[in-house]
Image 1: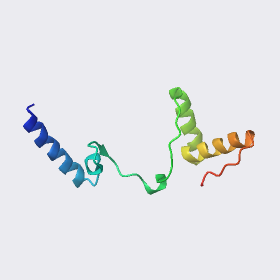
Image 2 (image 1 turned 90 degrees about the horizontal axis):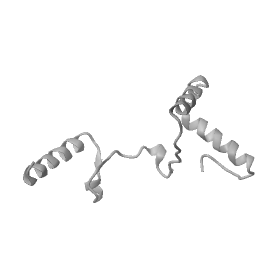
Image 3 (image 1 turned 180 degrees about the vertical axis):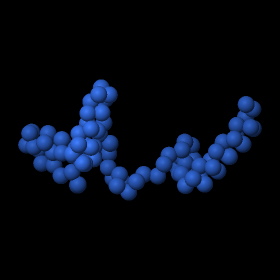
Length: 93
């Protein structure tokens, strides 16, 4: 596709995404589409790991069985881990 057409398509895409109330990195001065961060995640950092898919499903099933969320189970797990090593921790700080 010629550069002029690419630019036109990019502008149309940005227009559509803006109409969907998305924020673009162009607005941030970078150039890629990003969704607004939920208020519950502001000031938070992601902690992640790579596990077998069966472990992920088991974790989700545990959350369902206990009528809770994966987030709450992770908070509980981290609290137990920090307690084991005598490290003070507050999930909500």
